[in-house]
Amino acid sequence: MQNFLSKLFNQVFSKTPPAQSPVAAPLQTPVIAPSPPQPSPPVSTITPVTAESKIPAEVAATAPPALQAWRPQIAIDPLFFYWLMGSPGEGSSMEIEQKILHALYGLLASDLNDAVVVPRVPTVIPQLLGSLRNKTVSAAELSSHIVKDVVLVGEVINAVNSALYNPADRINSLEKAVMVLGEDGLRLLIAKVAFRPIINLNAGNFTRRAAPHIWNQSEKCALACYQLATGLDPFQAFLTGLMKNVGLIIAFRLLDQQCEEARFKYSASFYHAFTSVAATLSYRVAQRWEFPATVVQALQQQAGGSKAPVWTPLGHLLHNADLLAKMRVLVNHAQLKSNDQRLCAGLSAEAIDCFTNLNHVQLYDTTAALQKNNATPGA
Image (cartoon, rainbow, N blue to C red; front, side, top):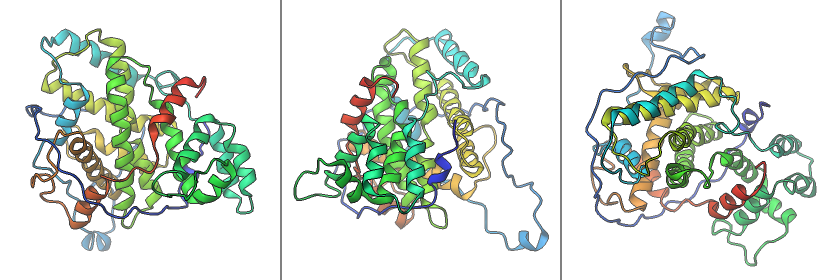
């Protein structure tokens, strides 16, 4: 796998102005009872920076205080998972849970080389990135690379005709669309297309229901990371947000393979173990795709465990952005009330603005592209 995604971290893109969010229907789904987090499997090959790292005394004396993760007053993570599971039915058994978790831990013990479980990134992307590095490349030359990928063509045309750009007349010319998007817009588009093969609506029952919502949340998480990336590379933060729940989609695909039931009632311990494994899969895949160590480390810190992580700035940002995006998706799907004061309790003014902005951030319509992707061989 070519290390091309790290080449994207040179540009940023325009922000979306704030908008007011609507009031949704009351919360009706139950909150899962808390359970001690399950330790992550010992499969990591990266050594994170810890509080025990050697720091000169003069630096330690002026070191900033440790970052504290935001704890929402509503159990957002369990509620989001419950919603993704489609209101689980009755009849859970330890046998079903153990079968699923055994398969997940087996996947973690592997080298993740199964392309069915961990899909490849579209081959056109490295070529296009090579063109983007050359400032003298014309729109026609860029178009010649984009036209090789049906999904990418559809994304570019949909993007320039969206409300974000609001052209006077519909743009159907790929070359003109590339000129309208500009280099930064293309980088955002490329990043999204690179992750798109993970979404497979032709998969089993659980993935078919959950994957579109996970992708929606991932996109909002990436945008929240960008908006709140003070002192960090905004585009690197954006890609880290996109990567956050890659492992969750993979875990749902494995769930489809292991569970014949359309719905099953799961225990709190299963929820904690399942989501911890999913988070671990995300940073394992990031390692496999040769992401920068700072990104892998931020993803690793989301996996939980028996000890609270010593947050890096990017890991702390990702934790908060992930929760903001989940809240936004749950509100937009009438699982939470947007005027519930508990939602934003403890958030900074910037984070509250971000939560509001995420309501109307729809940079591109993903529905048509998802359908094309599933119908395109080798996509």
